Picture: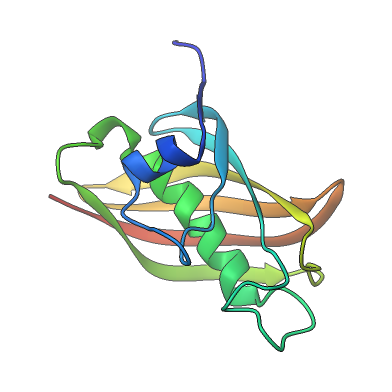
Length: 142
């Protein structure tokens, strides 16, 4: 097995098509393509999708987990024009709200993959506190 990879924000943008203000993954570590990844994001209080909200919206937490899952599934095919499309949420559980400006630590583990469809088991934490978990479905295109 090769050493796990680490990506900074620019490295993430080489894999995903997302850009500000919809890039919710600031860095990736412990990336073993096709298997697992860890990542993080800090959503600032002045973020346009959070204005007027008391906490980070649950949809942004899900999107951050989905982007990490996309990196885990897509990394080996970066630069080939391949895309991973987020297609479903199963077993989502929001355990507690996330305050703006808190670091959100994410983990993703690639589960079943059948043909061009796959699932990723994800979780989010702030410090040692669990925040959310979900099984996310993806479709590989290209």
